[in-house]
Length: 79
Image (cartoon, rainbow, N blue to C red; front, side, top):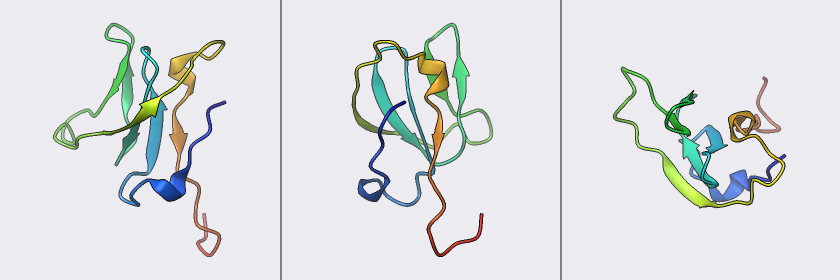
């Protein structure tokens, strides 16, 4: 499991995931993954929403396709 410091990421980004190369990205909406390209992407009509590169991570023992993580709800919000 990867650790994500959501407090350091602008609130407009609600998803994070690592690509096959070990780059961790934040996304505004839930992305899909491309097996062929080894990366996550925004399908139409959200294709223009650019992800935010967060950092490089070590994926040893981690399947990049299982790294998709949703921002946790704030403690004062209902799920």
